[in-house]
Amino acid sequence: MAQLLSILHTIFVMGIVLGFMILIHEFGHFAAAKYFGVRVEQFAIGFGKRLLGFRRGGTEYRINILPLGGYVKMSGENPMDDRTGDPGEFLSHPRWQRFVIALAGPAMNVILAVGLLTGVYMVRYEYPAVLDEPAVVGWVNPDTPAEKAGIQRGDKIVRVDDISNPTWEQMEVKCALSPNQPLKFGIERDGKVIDETLTPEPVGPNQYGAMGWVPQESSVVLTTVEPGMPAEKAGLKIGDQILTANGQEIPAVQALIQMLKRTKDQPLEIVVLRSGQRQAFTVKPTFDRGGGGQEPAYRIGIASNPTKVVKLNFPDALRRSLSDNKRSSFLILELLRKMVERKVSMRQVDGPIGIGSAVGAAAREQGWTPLLLITAAISLNLGIMNLLPIPILDGGVILLLFIESLMQKEISLPIKERIYQAAFVFLVLFAVMVIYNDLVKTLPGLTRMP
Image 1 (spheres, one colour):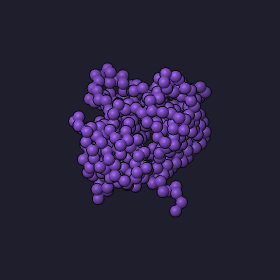
Image 2 (cartoon, rainbow, N blue to C red; image 1 turned 45 degrees about the vertical axis):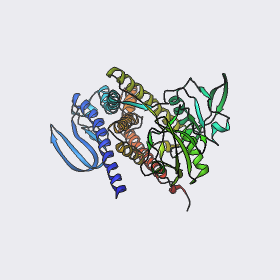
Image 3 (cartoon, rainbow, N blue to C red; image 1 turned 45 degrees about the horizontal axis):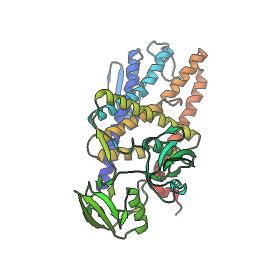
Image 4 (cartoon, one colour; image 1 turned 90 degrees about the vertical axis):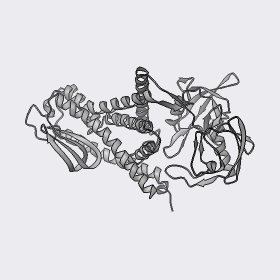
């Protein structure tokens, strides 16, 4: 019952989030169309049969039965419709006005993303403490590209491809988007820089590239102790600093994870520093069968993810929001480029199941900040994806308008019909592929033989 309620709660929150973003997107088209005098026949959330609505000012506002998007239906917008030459029709307006109308939807999503991040950063700007730190290695997992190349604790990454003195955020993003692709690194050790070419290996359900190294931490302080898990039952608490496990130093949580792979369900003797006093605890790991993209593993239910928290004034929050959204936009475009070049897996793209899972996880966290952050990220993705030059999408409309401007005439109706038909088939196939990948990541057994 609890699991069912959690699923229903996730669906409800996802519906609210996506509905709001679609409303903002379509309002952009609607407002621009109204401003230029284009007659708007329908403003709809969802597709299919109408559930409820009303008519005002010549426009029908409605909510439809399938909450999988929305649309603004403008008079004469469809090139297959009969044109009367009415000045209120979409195609009766100059191309530059149609360009603005098509651009207004994605622009509203980008503005929403910038606005949400700005508001969040003014209240609470929290981020992992290691992200803006120099890329100094604190631990190397065995049988990984880093370990095979001889990378050691204390090595400093001073260059990755064209980035000098990268932070951990810059370095990890570069690796994540380069699975199975050689990268040139500069590794500083004992005052000397060693040139290495390493190839990140794809890991996890999304097949992101990883090197197998972990950032250096000054100490391993618990930020999460899961209720009902062995660590909590043994008496460990948030704020405890882990010193040793079975007599071995623990420089990073990954070191403890690797130890669990060897010791499995054998009890661990963990020594922590609490309020300046050393205390020892005996913890018996439990086996987690995984699921939801997680691998089966022995766990004790702890995490160490130290964060930095600041509150920014409006100008600084706006600058940071613009910078973060700009960087995220380029990362989205880089991911799409590498997908086209078949350098990264389609599994790096999340569909409705993956998005719903992320939204549900954010909704379950304390406070509004996680949900607002994931909403901003999805809104930015929606805006960028709609600008792709694919007919039916806003970017496709803009592309055709640009081509017509160069030709100084309208593209013939038969050609437009074929273009839209091909684009529709492409989008359907793409949607099927994305949903299939979602299912594979959520239910890995689909790809296994009995």
